[in-house]
Length: 302
Ligand code: ZN
Image (tube, rainbow, N blue to C red; front, side, top):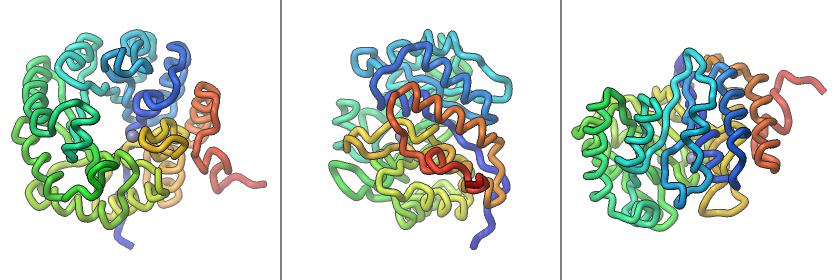
């Protein structure tokens, strides 16, 4: 097996990506979850998104959640924004790291954002300029990088060309979303190879869903290829919007549990993370799909 990196940076996305795909929960519960996660040792948290409250009622109280949350030293907090208006709200709220999404699949982009991928890329160029003027940074997340629920396979070259475009427009970071869990290790290799062909040094973050059970295999493959940043969601919070009842985001404790046993450091205290996962279950009132949450870590004895 290839050498693994000594350290991995996990971005916890449960409070945003997770809760956005669950039934709405009270503001106080969101703050409790964010605070619990801030104390797990995780170094990055996607805290909220500044989307239109009519489009996504789950995030209508983003300003209040963020105002009430404890900001723990050493944790980088970020916000997802859909457009320049959302970016202005995020900047007003004090965020200095913003994320914006574009789909590699034109059909998915139109269904999700009501415009073509090309039109979204133009909007993102303007958004980057505005955010940079305010002294903050922008990560562009390329959704459906490993497959699209409408179009099927997405050519890796198309993903790479979007990366070229957004980096030319000044994006500070790029990420690839496996929006509906269609990635496999083979496709991870193909997308990374295509992106690195024109952008050999660009640091990437990968966002896997475990919809079809391949998330940890994908992460291990990416680790062997030198990727050291991954999104994950506590408990596996957040379902799959295209397949009711299916799991979505890979569970953070499953990632941490595997990495620690392989000698890869994350900074996360697994027991504290499991406490946060139990809290997440209590908040959404349903059993979450995390195997490590169900069975406990491998170090636990019967
Ligand atoms: Zn996700």
